[in-house]
Length: 172
Ligand code: S3P
Image 1: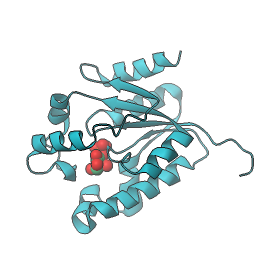
Image 2: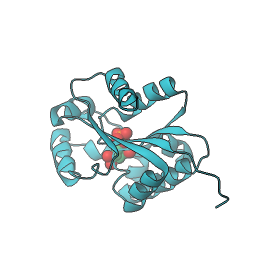
Image 3: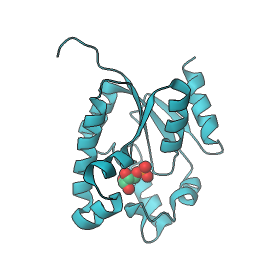
């Protein structure tokens, strides 16, 4: 280390469909920071769509690309708002990296909302087939996966703007 303090990024975590990307953009506009969408960054680095990474090499390869991308993003010296993918919290090393380099905000939503928001999205490989069943199963598996956040907000019944406002208010 050269004694320079690393920046504290703002890291949004949460299950698919909880609004991380949209809220991230709104927070970035308000705070004047750059926003980074991890899924888009993975696709850019890999030169292919997330669904193609899953189809061609499986979830393990995607998780590796996800962890590598996260660690590169967190090491940047400008402060960023980072919208993570819903499974980025699964690896302990990722959780530790988020906590040591950022203020971590978890977005949650009621199950029905999640199904309605992402149920039919072909871009989400983990939800193909019976999306409602897949969401229920994954939510159960990830029941406590997002509990490590510094701040948790339920987004059900709120617009993305209202969620961003609540986060903003919690800092004032
Ligand atoms: C995933 C969530 C997705 C994407 C990938 C896997 C997950 O991101 O990273 O399809 O495991 O929950 P979003 O949370 O932005 O949909």
